[in-house]
Image (cartoon, rainbow, N blue to C red; front, side, top):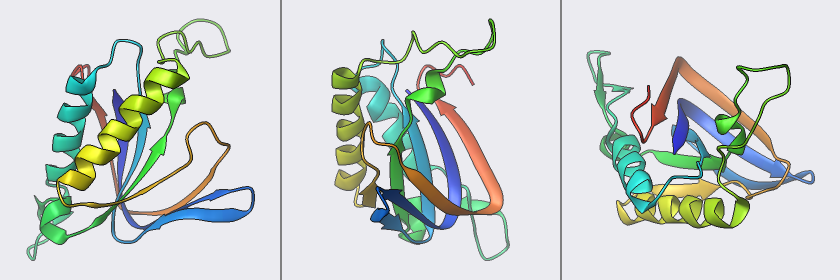
Length: 149
C-alpha cells in the first residue's frame, strides 16, 4: 500500500457538489492499494500513520503524533498512486489492485485507524472527488508498506 500523508489544518471531500467528509487539524491521507497488498500492509501503514511524529511540540520540533494531538484523519482512496509513468506518456495502472480487493483493504485500514481511537472521515471509493485541504508546514510524507521509499 502507498500513502501520501499531509499535515493539514482542515480538509474536505466533495462529490457531486455535496460535501461528504471533512476533518479538522490532523492528517489527510491519500491511500493506494496494490495488487499484492494484504492486511499486513494495512496494519503497517495504519500503525505508522497514526503514530508518525510529525506534529510540532511546544519547542516547534516534529515530536508529536496524530494520537498525541487528538487530531482528525481524512482518508481518500487514490489508485493513481500506483500509476507507473516510466514508459511512454500515459500512466500504467497494472500494479494497482482491482476495485473489489482495493475497497476491502481501504475499509480495513479505516477500521484499524478508528480502533486506535482516531476520528476518521472518508472520501467515496471510486467516485470523482474534489479534495480541498490546507497543508500546514507544508509537511508531506510518502509511505510505502513494502518500504520502497
